[in-house]
Every structure is written in C-alpha cells, then in structure tokens.
Image 1: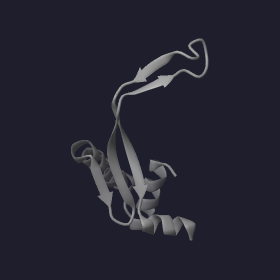
Image 2: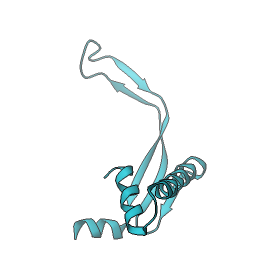
Image 3: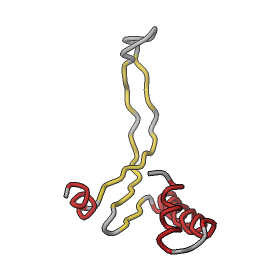
Image 4: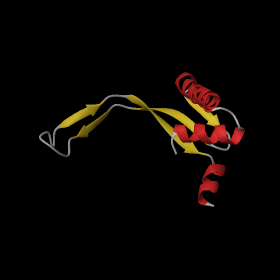
Length: 94
C-alpha cells in the first residue's frame, strides 16, 4: 500500500475530499518525521515504535569486484529501526 492508497481510503472512509485527506496524512507523516528527528523515538501505541540508533564506525572488507580483499571503514552513522507492537504483530499473524 502506498501513501496515495492511504489517502484515498481515508477520504472514502471519512467522506471528505482527497485534498483534505492529503493534508491530514501529510501532517501526520510530518509530525512523525519531526519526532524522529527531534527526539529520536516515536512510539505509536498499538502500532509500533520508531527508534534512531547510532551505528559505530566499523572496519570491513570488500568481498567482490576489483577491491576484493581490501579493507575499508564505514563511518559512524544513524539508522532508523521500527519495532512493531505486539498488537500489530498479532493482527498480522492472526
């Protein structure tokens, strides 16, 4: 399902225009994004939790191509993880 599908379903379900539904969905996505950037955690009870984690610098080795066997270092960086809530996992698994 894509964002446009969510917008269309929301508009149909609530009986509102697609423009209004788009504004609402964009607003929610923006709030989630801002929460991840500002706080590093967004917890949506019953759905799941977005968490920013710092991945430390790490030495690695090329496994393919011209540089196979040569070492390189990946810099420290951040990544976003999502942990599904038990309720969501249960709903998916039946």
